[in-house]
Length: 328
Length: 309
View 1 (tube, rainbow over the protein chains, first blue to last red):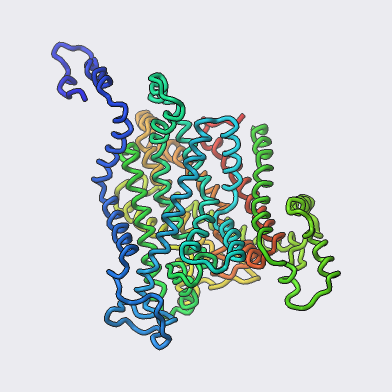
View 2 (tube, chains in turn blue, red):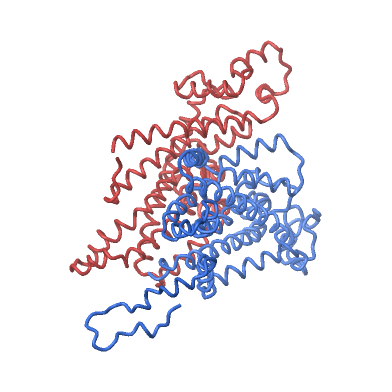
């Protein structure tokens, strides 16, 4: 970059004239083509590092990740071991929150339940973002028939409410494919969510690509001989990505909540799988009578903190990627 | 503008057809004979079975069945019955008023609380009120709606008996206050955040500085220059959400036993009742499409730079 000193106003100067160095012709010559998209993310990372929100969110997500990977660090009890003799037994050593209706350890079920919720949230976000990014980039970049087709198709999928659509899809699959293991069950919920959630990302991506594709640096890349596809991949998509990243982070939280809502309706993961949604769904009758509320509080708090982690991360990333909104 | 409205209405046709076709195909894929569910375990003669199959056009290719469905919906046919033999439109018209009331009440709570709180927070960005609102709205966003629903139902319906805990068939507006609030909660959080950001961003906009430089009073600047511009994205968000509120009603109606569209849809899906399921989805899709049209028109009212041709 150019040095700051040359920006000083020289003696005898009547009007402010921007110093020649401020139009950094030399700097332009020195610019490494690859460095342009990188610096945007580097700057965002610099801002992100200063944000307390980001560190709080990272801490939550880190604890969650450890919980998913090594549940035995948090509890030594078996989440599936249940004995009715322990029904609603009070907390004891090694069982900090006591036992539920089935006589299973509440804390152990909450720790092991993280795996299912996080798997659904992560995979559903991944599939949705991939689908949405590809369709949105194609629609925005190529326009014409591709745009019309993708836009109309996304209109159709967008118009059906997500939860209702998932209920229909999952209840149909439940009738076709009853006995399925952990990953197959997760996959069904993931596919149902992604199938009706992708238009949101598609619309954002399309809008961002439309905005970016007419900017000067894309023309510049074309002028130095970049092909259409290179342009899309190296210059347009990376610069159109920030709204998608923000949405994806928040979407992850939404998907985790959606899974628990589906489980509440009996249409999420099967009862045999330990998940927060299933535990909350089991707890509903207890809450109605106001007894043994701890059975609901523990998984509900775990779920809320998890979602909070991703919402906070989304907020932090939004501020880092859009410094304009932050300053005001 | 009328040309724009006509164009938009025309565009709803493929959306309507596509959405119903998707749901119809999904329900059609469901295995098992729906007639068994209809008649229970009683033995039934092949003639009766055949008559029922003919009545529901079950022997036709599914695209033909879907066309019959479209015909029935478009003509409001009274012969259009669900698998339990009851007319679909009667069921829907019985269930729609309570859900619509619920959704509109939730929408009103969302708009009033969200905009008022969001504006105050936005005007005093990073103040005490703003920070408290931020924390509360983030917590509300993170807790699943049914947990909030059960807790509020237990607290206000059972323990303190301020509101009725369940709604049931004979409902009044008063019964719906608690369910509507539960339904609105997640949206209130988002509306508040959106209004706050929008107001805060607009406060530093050039046109606001110009208005202040002209010597306008603070109240006038905020009312005419900040709020009007800040509300454009907020109105979009609130309006678009009527559809998702009606879908979110599936859970709220389950908690509070409201006999509305959500309950109807859930029952129909679990029974594999294709006519009712697809009609409910069609109703939701139409509501969504019309709301987005209204929002787009409101856009032009709020933002004079937008003109539809």
